[in-house]
Image (cartoon, rainbow, N blue to C red; front, side, top):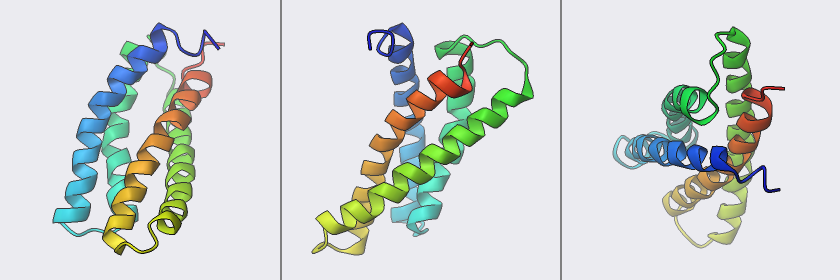
Length: 134
């Protein structure tokens, strides 16, 4: 368990804060200002945030110098799985909890919960699948 929360974990958190500021701004702007739907708004967060995340995590967090194209494929697979699990789980749970609230409140809440679930899943996936040196 100690290895899971080492220096790499804290670097991942720093990169995550940067991604969160960028991606969340895009997501809520698209949903609340541009009036795109739940899935397009939340997906845009991860398309833009994932580009930032890939370069920062590859070079800063995991110090991975490989030029292998397989890393990009593994990164895309990890992000996609984490996204669909996190947001797919968050939406029905939050809708049930906030059943008396408007769709907008439910979906904004689901996006927040989905973000939290995504961080955890993504860290595990990037650490032990995408950028694993073994």
